[in-house]
Length: 226
Image (cartoon, rainbow, N blue to C red; front, top):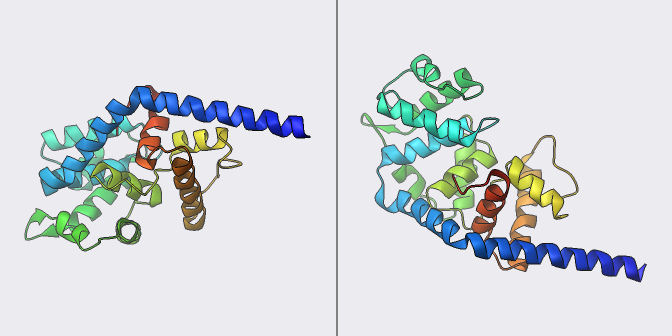
C-alpha cells in the first residue's frame, strides 16, 4: 500500500512538473494575450466590448475561430449593430444553432442599447466584484451560462479569479484528478465547485488560474487564442 501511494505521489509530482515546464515555455504568449484582454476594457469602445459578448454567445458547441470569424463578417457588413435576427443568422456560417444565437445577440444588443448606441461598460462598471457581475450577466443575458459569462469577462480583462470550464479545460482537470468525471450537464453549484477546485489547484502549483486556462486550451488546440 505504501509503495502504491508512493507511486501515485511520484506520478502526480511528475505531472505537476510537466505543467510548470509547459507554463514556462508559453508564459510570454499567455501574458501577451492577457494584456490584450486588459486593453479591451481600458482602451476599446463599447462596440468592441459588445462584439466580445456576441462572440461568447456564439461559442457553445461551436469552434471558437469560426465564431470569431463570423463576428468579423457581421461587423464588416454593419449587421452586428444594425441587422435583425434573420440577417445576423445568415451571417453565422459555421456556427451551430445560428438561428437561436442570432436571436440572443439581438436581445443582448437591445438590453445594452442606450440612446441608440450600445453601452456595455456603464452597466458592468457598477460591479466591483466580478463574480457578482457574472451572476448578473447569467441572469439578464439570454444565451450566457456561467462558462460563456466567464469567457466574456476574461476576454475584457477580468479573468483573474474565474474559470472558463469548457471541454478542453474539463478534459485536463479530469486527467489531473481534480474532477472524477466530466459532467454531462453543468448546474450552477457544480460549476462553482469545479471552479473552486481549479482555483485551489492553480494556487498549489503557483500558476494564476487565468494562465492555467489558456495553458490547457493551447495544450489541446495548439495555440493561445480567445
